[in-house]
Length: 76
Image (tube, rainbow, N blue to C red; front, side, top):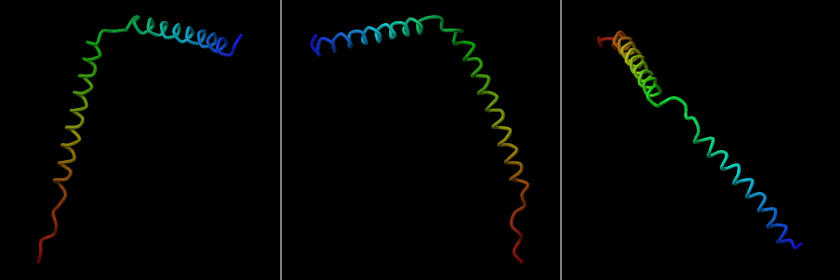
């Protein structure tokens, strides 16, 4: 056998292996995709709502704290 024939045979086996692995992965990806996106969207909407409420509460608390800090002393 020549070197080219051996190389072609080795590459053929390797390409077949890669093709088989790729097909198996694609079949796996097309399988069951889990829940519908609606519950996920509802959960994300809830998390965003809670995050906005926490941010608003923190901003209010910071503004109140900053408002209680006395100004500079009056000039004589």
